[in-house]
Image 1 (cartoon, one colour):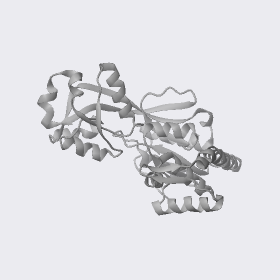
Image 2 (spheres, helix red, strand yellow):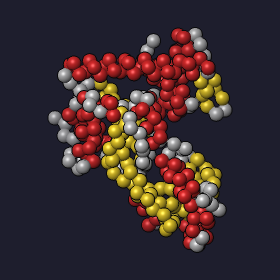
Image 3 (spheres, one colour):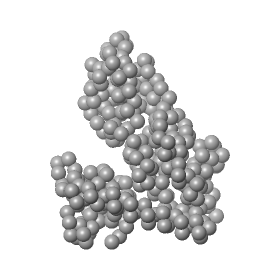
Image 4 (tube, helix red, strand yellow):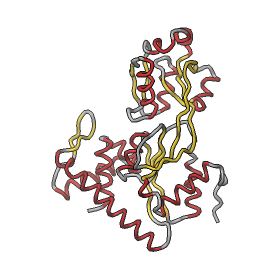
Length: 301
């Protein structure tokens, strides 16, 4: 049995989608399908049912998932221990990122990591903040970036920056939104990103605070789609104001004046693992980059 097949199995089970799972494990969709087929043939059971809503794990798959996670965790722990004994920073590290306006400086971090520790491979997986936090807790991720305030004693949470969030709206709605305050916002359709997105969580919190019920008429994972829906006059949304400033300058959207908030951007690891050489090394480089202590370009000998 190949370990990569187990990783693919867990990715499909979590994402409930071959396409999203392929993005997580950095494979093509046909390769993901082939992994699942090979695993089903080897185990002689059906792992997923294809439905209109995606890939649904069978009862057998649900029972096997905890054992698959445990097996991968033990194998990776074995590999980390071997790297420690070898005296070097060696192995594959999985880092979760999310689509946000704040510059995570990921390319600079990866460049410096490769320059200093060529035997340490970084695998980047893109998801939302909630799934990144869950991935670190479940040890499916070794480190992750996540936006928002998190109270979880099992985590070490390092703030690396702040996003400036506001509500953006189509310019054609400017006059209608000028008066009326928060209650007026409930009269308009909204575009939400995924339920695990920190912006979506923020909207729900704001709704409770101001006794407003937002209408999420659209949902999308892609921020480009959010922009298009707002520009075309179909919805309001929450966005990083620094990221959308060019749209505001061009008159494509406007920022509603009744709200602006600073959203923490964090680097997160499991507290009990923060002293592992691989994770300690990554945290050190990432923090130096975000403090501006490392150059923009890695010089390769």
